Image (cartoon, rainbow, N blue to C red; front, side, top):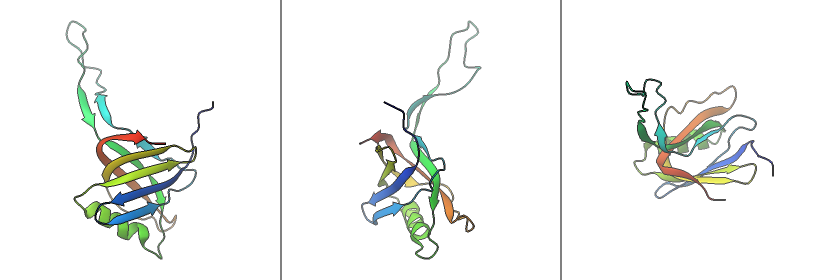
Length: 136
């Protein structure tokens, strides 16, 4: 079997008080997924005088980031991503991949929500609790 990469077809969020939302990632552009969990610090000086390793382990949130298309007429992305970011309650996010995989995590919108009007797109970053899990 081949390894399949490629586009994220859809980013969706189901929020307990705000409802359900769908966002369209831009085709042929990188969308990064980080499952979260325990990570070791990358530190070349993490060693004792006798040469034994010192491992610094920290828990990281899952995160996903990449460009999504923006409909300037409907205001879907700007209005709804702003509302999701403002909410103190996390939503359930899913990321549907072109190869059929679907990842799910509970989290919130982080960072700037800045639209590039020339390309009709904006960067979207979501981080969350626990780990991003493969559900399909």
